[in-house]
Image 1 (spheres, one colour):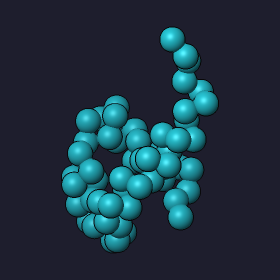
Image 2 (cartoon, rainbow, N blue to C red):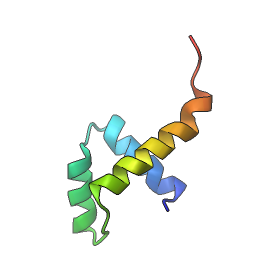
Image 3 (cartoon, rainbow, N blue to C red):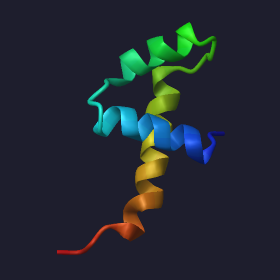
Image 4 (cartoon, rainbow, N blue to C red):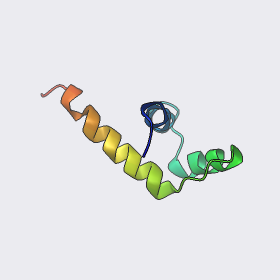
Length: 58
């Protein structure tokens, strides 16, 4: 499970700061947080699904 703030942090790091998931994984390890790259990816997919209703249709 992921908190909304953690999901926002991961998405922000990925898309605003252009930080790849492997570097985010390394950063979390330095903080003592164990999370695999696969978990980060799954959380990004879930976050994208939750944000989909907010996207404008063209």
